[in-house]
Length: 244
Image 1 (spheres, rainbow, N blue to C red):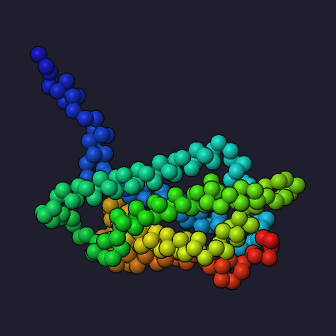
Image 2: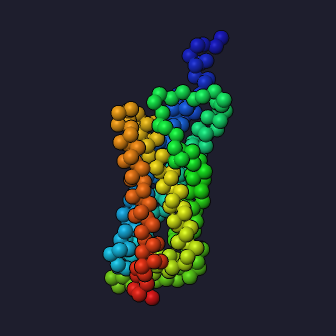
Image 3: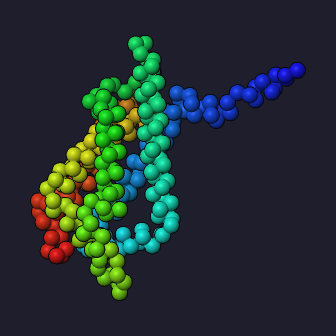
């Protein structure tokens, strides 16, 4: 005879049920999104050391490389977070597609904007841009010459990140790829950051307009910060004398 308790246990674990639920998927997308926004912000702060001169950005890069296996563990974790974010975003999109033509009723939803309508497309293109960026400056296979750029720092031979970045952003098509990729990332963040707050319940009708303005302003400030580096190098010649 099968007991009621054994019948209950035969179903999915409560955590699995939550993950597969609509709110579970949305929460996972929100939390992974927050982690990625924090990384994008921190990465920009590190990149800004290029304005302080070759020794600053090369020292920053050396400190990261000195982490050894931990650095690769962090990279793997970030990649896992990114893939998880994309995977659950696609699950939600598929769920919404299957729910049509019935309209999805959400309490006080964020109004539809161009940013919201391009979320899926911009996310896919941004993922491709990230792969290009890793191949360009991290794995350094886009330009093989980057593999052999070294310099001396405090008596140690280190990779010359300053010269590599300057050389990379002296090429017109590379600058255009970065500006286009960062523009799409900004479109994604402009709507995405606001959606994170709604999913986690950290908003209401009264503060939502201000929150939308603040999150979009933050996204575009990130855009200006990131593109300032290739523009400063390509247009204004930042570091071209030092990197020769």
